[in-house]
Length: 428
Image (cartoon, rainbow, N blue to C red; front, side):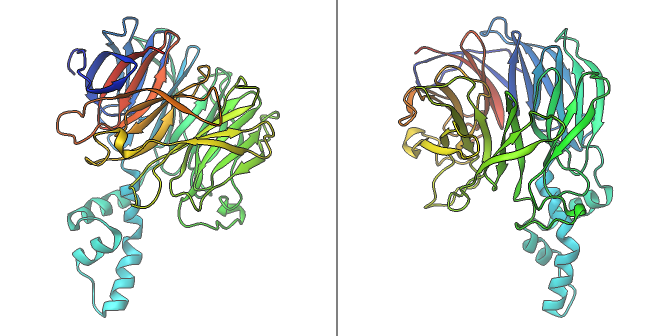
């Protein structure tokens, strides 16, 4: 890892670059008590903790490796003296293709009247011929290690492992937590796609499951039948505000879940806009304080492979004064003209915003569009008031700004999906 440097950023507005670290790509960054907690995308890198007391000189104070070479721990949350890191199968989408080999081989043999060649099988499932042996090995090996780990970070430089909880399937993706409960998005035996499992952390050495929530159709072991293919409709993650969880459910849109009885979560509202919009719902979050006298929530879609003619992933502003009926107020988009890297390669479009309220400001990552700073003081007309587009890391065509957090000093921390960690301040 290189020492912090002062980045030379050519594309920004109303910000001051403070530092850049050349580190492996990350999936989430959370800032807590002058420390940045980063979940890295790929093994052997797991969770890194940086002292950011001086944001111009972030200093790594701890590093936690994934539990094995087949898992990544790319998400992290902190509350009080507790930290949770996920454990999920690395390259999960790739290895899922291995599950299709047997059926594809049989179908091709019936169609062709002969055993299919490796290249024909590979083309049908969308991989290179040389990948088939890797997929078969992964299928034979299986995966039973998904879940999450709990840590004591009273001393962030010396995280202390408290518990490992194994869940099911490919394991845990994104999640939320407070000092009492963890709101985990995970696959579980008997369900299709990620569901919500709530754990009590009263004794963090023994997290205890207290409830589950899923969408109708997910619980196949209970006799339900999904009306969608594969894992298309699933929980991405749910964020708690008061006694409500605000759940982003991929191609099933946004769900509002009442947890006034923590042991019996129940759906009270939903908003689904698929179709016609092409990108899945990544994050749904109610603002704790009203803006312009309105109870609002933010929602953002995650950009994937862009289809020409379709809108890029974007940010929604929702009125949730009636949580049973979320209603769109406005949307915010970034034109390809607003980033020189929009068509350079990699993703361009919305992904994530800081999961806390900062007045009327939204700091949103836009992959090759960097970080966009949006003011929703007038909810009907969100207005960009600043942006920060990091330069691409060496060997990469574009930045891939993946996740962002903001501390109480107004310092902004952004992790790149491929490589790099940038710190900047915002002057309104």
